[in-house]
Image 1: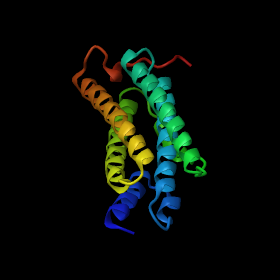
Image 2: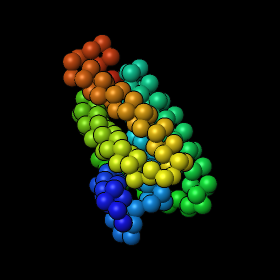
Image 3: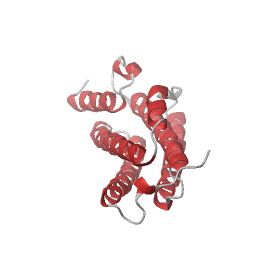
Image 4: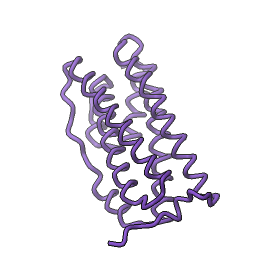
Length: 183
């Protein structure tokens, strides 16, 4: 296993924190695509939660809808790439404990926790894909997928950081002021 492959694998394990990745014998397309699958479904779950907590905050609703579309499309690309490489993708392992903890928060507490986790996760994903890019020099399909995914991850990070800043500044679209439903 070359140094780039080891670095890519370790970055992916660190980013995802999934025990099954830690036991993988070597880094390959299967590992990256399974990690991307986990990321895509986690982000779609996060978007669903964000939308449910957004109340009447249009900026948060837009962010949730953008995340849903971006990561659903990315999963379609992962599935197509896995099929072309004859890779069977692992089932999504939902972080129920983490989601339950986040779901208990509301208003400013939810927003602060959500943005902090999202920024951390998105930065980790970007680093993972940058590292993976160096490890797949000879696989044009993987290079294309990584090259198309990185700008989406960077755009989602920028959107999240912007909302995080605006929330802290108290803008007219202040996520801390989002109304919650009257259930």
